[in-house]
Image (cartoon, rainbow, N blue to C red; front, top):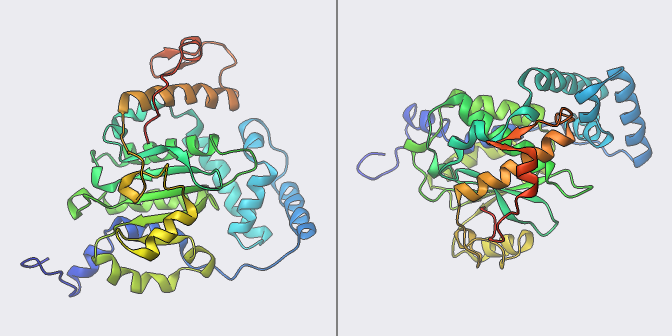
Length: 319
């Protein structure tokens, strides 16, 4: 920016555009081949074939590879069995090494002190878990810390999805965002790689709320690399815009939606309260993955029995 005017000259503008979080967010949705239409019987057959191709599984890998999981990987690879198998095997390997199900809140809590990414205390109209992202509240410069924090919240959001629901919604609030709050390019690339390769078909909708003007120029280029199915999931929403208001109403109940997103509720991130909720969920995570068998599991400084027996505050959880 020169004297308050956006500089769209290259290469300086290119460097700025491609360092933005939206670029790295949208690259996870790069154009794919058009999805082939196959009926339910064919889908079920593909799932069986993929399971056979994977061979015997055990432990957490078996727990991870549900039929719904296999369907998501097949969908992500346009129902190409070979490509889906390769993608899923890479995820199984990544999970065995990175162990996302073993990350506990007390390990990443410092990353969440400002509420830059948190789970909302409301769902969208279809009952899906909602993650709220506020890149303007970026508070650390640790690449691994940022990655583990987001991975933890992805795992937590998935754990809290209603039965039969495979996807979640994202609300990204750009208020307060600036180039100074942007995460490093390499970190963003690593995050996007993990999201697109190890959490496929987990996104139902992403709302980009009040994005800076520089995004308009960026989007004119990027939209040509996004397939039609994914293009429909990405919504640019602006305050005091009638069309934007209708978009938000179609996906969210305005009574529950925070005022920052055009709703009537109050968005207040209480780190202490949110930490207690995450400590409780850590117990659920350990139980789900069979990590609490020795009965001595601890979460965020609390023993399992303490977390389970101590009543939670009736105040609304942080969003």
